Image (cartoon, rainbow, N blue to C red; front, side, top):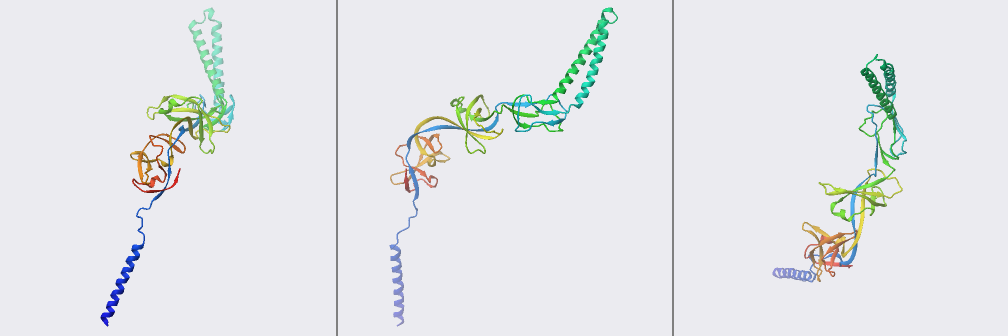
Length: 345
């Protein structure tokens, strides 16, 4: 009886094992490498307008520095501020001229004494009562006193600071109570309100640029671009950076601050060639490449040379027109991967 029970138990275990094995064999084997879904594009013959990009800042076309030849004189009043439009000859600041007035009064007295002294000896020079040398000395003293008086009168006029040219004030250094220095400008003015952009471009593109060439300029903080034209191409390349400066005239009716960061896009003539989406381009330490698919949808690396960049496309050299290029998801592919094409452009 016991042997029969054991025999039945062993048989049940064996039967369960056989059923389980058959069930597992009936299940499909999982794919160890699930196919990556990609979008494929073919090279198309087309054209791209070459765009030269350059960065820089806004500056006055011509900067006027309002200087004074006086030093150590205090500022008594400031009549113009940053952003103000001024006319030529307009009063923009007043210096403390009290000490200059006192100096002028003293020099007027000195000149009158020197003039009277010369008149006395000059009136009797023909009588022989005075020597010719004395007459010359008195004339020299009078002339020196007159020169000092003229300088004092000029300094008094200089205590009133006038704008030498019309324009907009973009910097003010004059402070009430401050001492002026002849080496430092009190104001800086953008002549005739003309603000332009100075941009730096590599020497390799200088030959492609010319005066009056249209430019699209994007100013920091502006949503829309500003129309511009190249006004000047400087004939000097920096030895260290191999860059040259260009000046771009900005055609805007709105006030433009000085020192604003800006980006210029200079449109060149269109070139024709084989085009691919920018998203297809991959890069590593060996250079640029794209993934192309075989007939079995297996990924293969194809080195390429990019000859021109556009906004959404790149122009490449030496690629077959029927090549199936991975347009998207290329960053997740490895050499030899099998992929699934979800869209063929």
